[in-house]
Amino acid sequence: MNTYRQSTKKNRTILSSLLLLGILICSVVLLVSLFMYRPFTMEDVLQHAAAARTCFSQHLTSLSAAAASWTDTSDSGVSPDAPAIPDTEEEPVPYIRSTGESGDISSLQAEYNDPVDQIYLNMLDTGCGPMIYYHQGDIRWGDYLYGCYDPMSKYGCGPTAVSMVVNSFGSTAVDPTDIAQWASDNGYYALHGGSYHSLIPDALEAYGLQVESVTDRSYEHAAELLSSGHILVALMGHGTLTENGHFVLFTKLLDNGKIYIADPVSYENSTLEWDLAQLLSELKKSYDSGGPLWAVKI
Image 1 (cartoon, rainbow, N blue to C red):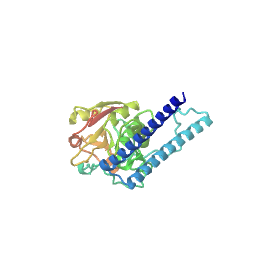
Image 2: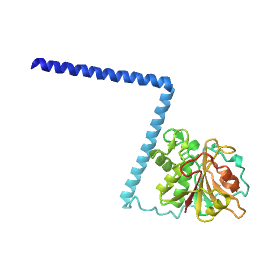
Image 3: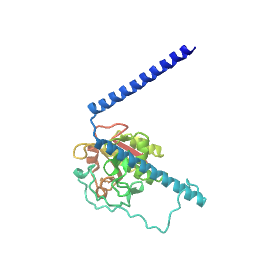
Image 4: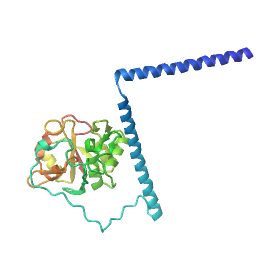
């Protein structure tokens, strides 16, 4: 009996040693593979650690704000889901004034050139009624890391465009960081690439809005949609416009046949009148998820 127990114990010791050896070998192979096929430095490690720390901080801030909101509403006896009572003392948000000038297609690009220390608090006159204007480089969220890695000021046109429509015509109050967080949580964030095209229809539908792909992208059909209670979300493409694509909103058809747009990366572009036919010709040629043009029924 003692001999059997000693033999069993010895076998377990050998198995444990083999298992440990296997783990060590796998670890060495993994490290060698990382260095050979994706070389990285200590700087890379520090950058990823900083991004993780920032991401954790953003989540912690969001949770703290939510907890504070819940505490405030609980103490006041008001349901957290109850609509906010507007403050009649607040000054009305000013509208963006149109300059009456025509937009130059070469100035419609994804690069952020507006002032970095600006708060953009404006309304837009659209064919569907007033719409809040959000700028992805707004000081309130321009440095927010989309997906915990990419700053909103450079990669946040998708969440910013969606948040304008949702906050103005949906039933939920959101800002660009809310949509960015939703996109990250649900797989619509593309590392160093902004957002997957599917963000537009899926996010808008998730927030209760009706979205359809526009397959007839003629001037006549786009003008008809803008005249019948729709906001158009456009993915502008490569060429005189952007390298990787840029989301803008077509918001109102004018009497002269031109349109207003809401450009998440340019306040100035949102004050100009644009040639609809030219914009349609510059839609991104490579697209998916119903793009490069979607109609949102308001």
